[in-house]
Image (spheres, rainbow, N blue to C red):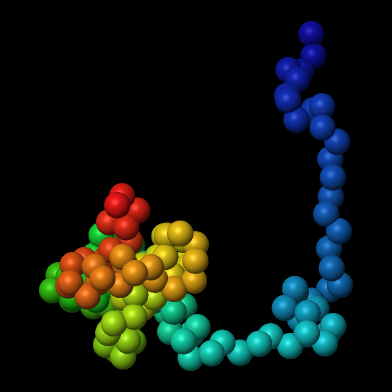
Length: 136
């Protein structure tokens, strides 16, 4: 009867073309005259905080500020990065630094910067207002 047909038998094999030997995308961009822009201090600090948000070993980060999460991880002996605490203490009232943003923007509405509701809730000392603002 022959061999059993597979679904992939009906699609042609397509091989991707490789770039020049020894080159990767970053090197090609540099050759084209596009120099990567260095990150500003704020952008570099926010990237450090995003990496902290993505690090699962420090526990969940939903509903609490980054500083609360850092302290919880320290109390549990998980040794969170001290640079994260330094950045958070440098920007005590700025929700961009204190709270993990669901959208990558300042507020859930997608507008850059915090909304008045977010700023007010953070000033009251509550946890991270991102989720509260979403349901108000």
